[in-house]
Image (cartoon, rainbow, N blue to C red; front, side, top):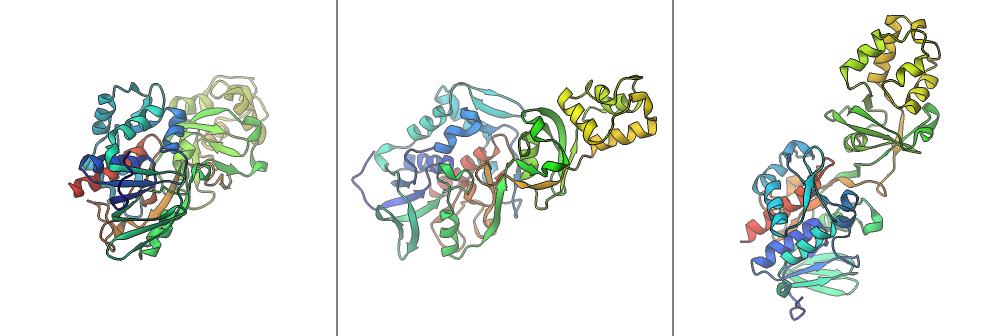
Length: 394
């Protein structure tokens, strides 16, 4: 790593996925780069992603997998850097990987393999890496000045890849938004995304079911249908389907859960042959016993199967298909995997990620108002948005 230059072509604020990838691309073009990060090592959020195995992309990536106030903005960057291009890079470094479910690509061994690869991609002779260095502000005259707790650094261009507000213990802060606002940008209101939901405890015995998972279809007023697992927690609900839906939630009480995703189970409940079996035991032929018993008790369905008419059984089945738990909130940024909202993309170039207001000021990754679904999409946005800068700088 070279420390013989003070002024650089680029300063990158944030040593996460987008920042490291941008540094690799730019230093390979011969640009000098200073990366500034408040943490003690680069790529800390990468290391904990995917349970430590880093779900580094998703082969099904398309603009439909992203949330934004300006939904077409991400199309340009995503079209110019595909998941297969990143997979090809992973293969060049002989990193073993596998497809888990729904197009999600994971490392076989460790997320450390991805961080090592990103660091190796950076031309170290063109890099200064400033760790445990907190950015306080950015100003501009003819060039940019980045004010930090370690001093003031200058550059021709600044890339803000500081991430969002999720997982503050990993160094998340509002500095990216503050920089944007200081240069006249607007921020689409932020909120926790991919986050567990808190449910009113008195409405269902969620804590008694903590750790239990069932398959479901979940939808909010604004979201598509997510058909994945639902997980009960001590505070409410989590699991892939809930996390997906949470990113779309703007109103409390706006989630609908279908627990009868197999059509044959509707018929089994409404027209089954369970005779004098208790209703809760009939339900347990479809659901885990703990859930079946809790559901029957909560809904006061305490009689035998044959006690209920077919019309009543159909109503019970419809309850299971249209469950609307009373949501009290979510577990906040500390448990959120991403931040929804961010720098207004209507003020950025979709081709270069450069500010339309300030030349040579760029915003990439999570700090931008582009939020992916669960399953590698946010990493692909990091790679694609960083790549957009390198194309414009070539």
